[in-house]
Image (tube, rainbow, N blue to C red; front, side, top):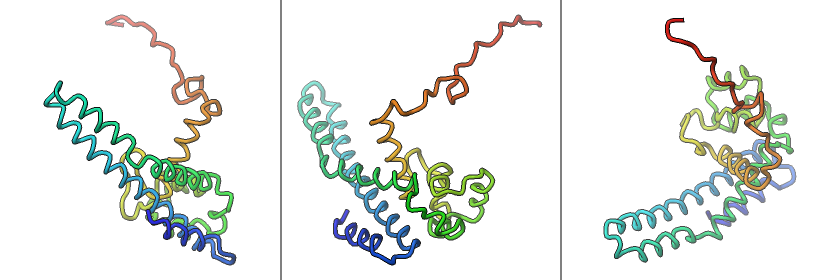
Length: 201
C-alpha cells in the first residue's frame, strides 16, 4: 500500500465541497488499497509456510528449521499488517453505521452504480427491504456483482472486506455485546430432540 496514495485519497474525501459520490469513490479506493496490501502480506506468509511444509518430509532433522520458518511467517511485516487491519476495520465501522449518510445523499440507484451492483441484483435488496449501504455491501454482498458475484467467505469487494474486518474486530473485542446465538429464537436455537417413533407406525 502506498501511503502517499492513501493520504491523497483522504485529502480528496475530506476536502470541503467534495461531492458525496467522490467521497464514496475515494473511500472505496482506500479500502481497495488496504485490502490489496493485506493480501500481499498474506501471500508472502504463505510462501514461508509452504517452505516449512516441504521440510516436514525430513523430520525430525528439520524440526528447528520448521519452527524458525513458522515463527518468521507469523512475525513477517506484523506491524504493517496490524496497522492495515486497523485502518480497514475503522473504515468498515464507518460504512456499517453510515454516519455520513452516503446512501441517503446519493440515492439507491447512484450508490449501486458506484458500487458496480448489477441491475438484476438490485432487485434483491429491494425485495429484502434493506437498501442501506450496509445491506447492499455487507448483508447481501452485492458490491462488484457486475464483475464477480459470490466468492469465498470473507472475500468480496473493498467495502465488503472493510465491513467484514469491522465485524471481526467487534466479535474479538466486545464479545459481551453480541447476542447469545443459542438462546430460544436465535440462529442456533436448541431444538428439542425428536419424538421417538417405532418402525411400522
